[in-house]
Length: 620
Ligand SMILES: Nc1nc2c(ncn2[C@@H]2O[C@H](COP(=O)(O)OP(=O)(O)OP(=O)(O)O)[C@@H](O)[C@H]2O)c(=O)[nH]1
Image 1 (cartoon, rainbow, N blue to C red):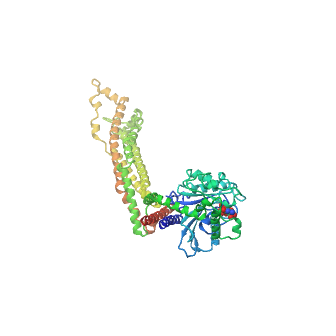
Image 2 (image 1 turned 45 degrees about the vertical axis):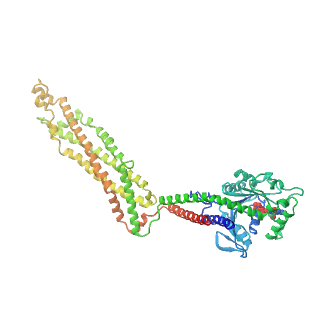
């Protein structure tokens, strides 16, 4: 039974120390890492200043070692782990922050607590939530973890901030509100229980009283004729656990250097011979309190093991997932680095292609350019103005000079068509540009969607730059090709179109209109309107052709090329790099590296905690 109890409490002690080594002491820090600390049970001593907290702690330990003084002495939580050793050995203490040093002089322990407190808070009266860890090894203790907190106070004394009372209460509350915390609520017997700060706080966080132990100190200081029977028998204030009364050393005892052994003897005698408390003697005193706590702690831990195991397993899963997400560290040799970089380029390219192929959104917008923007731009070309009656007359007259044309104004047609075709250059280039920007946007999106890349800002920039440079090349090619399509339209006109035009001047136009009137008509407004309308319908035909061929050219030069050749461009770019430059590409964001380190350490904690729990579970 004892063996089990020691194993269980020893387990919690080891996990608690591991937590602190790895920076896990609950809530603080905002690291959003899972915390094990808060799942561990502990005993927290709570009480007003001078209520006798230090005295209770010391008498449970059987040693004098806590700093004393007026005002706030305890300004950081003290996590006190008691380890029972075989009888015969020397008692000693060890601080977690001084791992190699064994203290056998407990007066030096007291000094070290003071100095370590000042190291964190300076010589101010400020408080800090970072705990000091102290282990005490002795044959006279039971395995127990106790946490000493600053005493609750009502008013700030000189040199303390006004908020000190609230600060302390908040810190104490942050410990006692945890469901795994066993509260040792200290009240001096010479104070009215109804005004006890510790009971008030305990009731607030533990209304049913299942984890609160009421401790009444200074029973020897009660006025003659009064006693605390009502409280000790649970009649004044009911808790689930029995109240324990104590008699610690008075200030006079301390001044006279009454040692702990003598103090305990005196306490036993007090109860054994007391007319008031004789019947309760076996359930009073610091030794009884220590055993009671230890036993309770054991049952609490036993009940918590399954929950702790599942919490640990869940946290391990979460951390592994986050590490996968952050990416594992990259090898340091150039080969491994090049391999990693090429892998990352491939990962990016895969996502980029998915966008183009419709597996991810964004690619369809390219077809929006062809289906909407290009046709709309073509429809908006200002042919109405360009092919107005006046302009047509002007161009046609200039082309033919003084000699009026004999059949059709061939030169005029050519000039009108050529100058109209020029208008198509705009939409052609605009289509190329629009697709170019969409592709660039897809590169940007793909980069940010490539999880594996998120940790390498330099490589991300490099891939972006190389991809954009490649897209720039594709754009050049796209422009050249689409403009060439336009040029091709003006270099050779579709002869059939003109052959099929009604030759109204040869046929004589309307029946009954004679040749003379036809000749007159040649220079009439109707004549030029007919020319304009012929050119318009020719241009309409060209517009339809280009509406079909420009998208083909754009897809061929830009989209298809981006899909097929982007990766090659990236490879070429990376291939030019020296080993040193490759390493630089894999430089990571320091914050991310720090986070990875934190996760790795926390993972270690959980794995070792799991092993500890496993070994205890098997030992049972
Ligand atoms: N006679 C008598 N004196 C006690 C008893 N318990 C504590 N004292 C005295 O009360 C004073 C305060 O005790 P501490 O143990 O220092 O109290 P504390 O709650 O730790 O006080 P702070 O650290 O100042 O918050 C000391 O002088 C103790 O000797 C007791 O049961 N009987």
